[in-house]
Image (cartoon, rainbow, N blue to C red):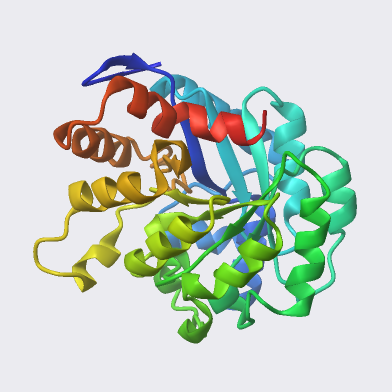
Length: 301
C-alpha cells in the first residue's frame, strides 16, 4: 500500500523492464566491449547472471515502496527465460511479459504453455514490420487461445535510453508506429486484450480513436510521457488523463512507471506525478484504485 491523496492504496505497476544479465550481454556484444565495462559506462548496477537474484532485488525494491505487483518485461528478443525464472521465483508478485520479433523464430508456445508468460510484446517500429503482418497474426492466434494473456503493442515515438547512452544506433522505422494500424487487428481478435503503452507516445488522438472503436484495447500511463512536447502548448498530463478516462473509461487505463535499472530502481516520481494529476482532475478513490491496481490484476484474473 502507498499513501496517496485518497489515502492508502494498493499499487500494481504494468510496465517494468527486467534488465537481466542476458540483456546487458546483448548490449555489450553490440558495443564490442566486455560486459563488465557496461557498468562504468552507464553508471548502472549490472545484475548477477542468475535472474532469480534480480527478481529478489525487484521484490525487495517493490516492498520498500509498497508496490504489490509488477509486470516484468523481457526487453530483448530471446530473453523470455529470464522473466520466466523471475515469475517462477515470485509467482505472487510478478507477471511475465516477453518481447518478440515476429521475423525471428522463438519458443513462444512453450513460454505461454508454462503459465509464466502473460503477454507478448510487439515493437513494430523497432523491428521494422507491420502489426498486420501474417507473422504477427500467427503469434496473436496463440495468445487468443489463452484467455489470461495480452498483446502489448508499442506505438508512437520510440527512444531507448540505454542505447543512446552507449552510442548504439537505433534504426527504427516510425511508419510502423501508428495505433490506427492496430484497428483491424484488434477487431479480428475481439477476445484478446491489447495494451498500448505511453498513451500512444505521440499518437494520443489515434490511440483514443482506437480505444473508442475497440473495447479490447487498453492504454498504459507509463514513463514521463515526454511526447507531450509535440502537442499543443496547453497539453499536460492532467489533460491526457482526462481524455483517456473520458474515451477508454477508468477500466481500461493501466498505471505504469517504465522503471528499468538500478540503482534508481522503482521510479516513484512517476507515481507521484500521476497520482497528483489524477487527483487534480477530480479522479475519485474508486477510479484511482482501478487505474493504479485493479485493472492490471483483473487482466490476469
